[in-house]
Length: 377
Image (cartoon, rainbow, N blue to C red; front, side, top):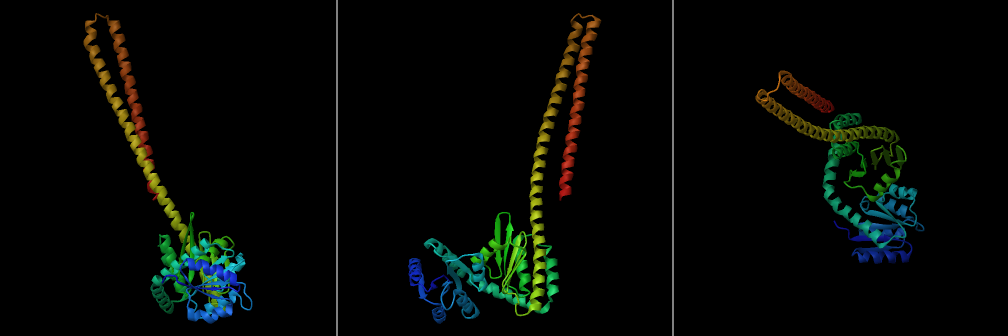
């Protein structure tokens, strides 16, 4: 369903006028409310897809309004974007803890609000496509929970994860494992300069991505209300629905999560290391082929030189053998000439032996390189 209806809530009429002008330019249907109480009175009948909710309002703050909306099953699907003059990490985390999907800081420009709304509109379109898949996955997850113990789920995951060699497949396996505990989650995987996001709901909301960015280097574990964020070097996992009404179960599930995420991090590191080694192996094989080609060309050149030298000395020897007897030389002169010819031929033979040694050295180097690639594999 495309984004059409928006409810803007602010106790300042001037702010509402600005928002109305921007939204009407974008062809959205807009309804306004000047207080949190008025918002709650009209929200069900108007049924907006997105609420732009001011944080600082008298009598009832935006946080309280959002909490009430998200606590109502018939309204909890509505996307809430907080509008505030303050944008600290604490206030964003507070907004997220009460259920908001996004946050925009006053004063904001036309293009900034448009970009955020277009992104939320895309989320709505994709959400419809994913709803049936989520329902099927949830049904499967709870069925698995009914037939397996918590430790059984962990053992199954550990056995499964060791066979996975693809990053996306690993992320989906982690989502499915946590779903078997009845948990919804968001995942960020950091590979080189890329950040990959996965979610039980199919998409990570903008405020979740901001939390990953802010908190991934701020410690191993963060807990707020019924949510837990676990950080590792390559992997961060945000659990959305911890069992806060049962302290014992909460602690047990938290320990399970930390272990499962740790195992996933190690397998992720293994996948990335293996991919690096495979790439290095390809480069080494390419280098060996190049060296082999160079060696083959050089040996061919040496063989050609040897053949040419043999032919030259053979012709020279035949020439002297046929001409010297008719030159009228005495015996000493003939011996002198033939001696030098023999020395030249012996020198050529010595060079051939050196060429043979070069060939043997090349063959040994190539053999060692082939053994190296075999060892790497």
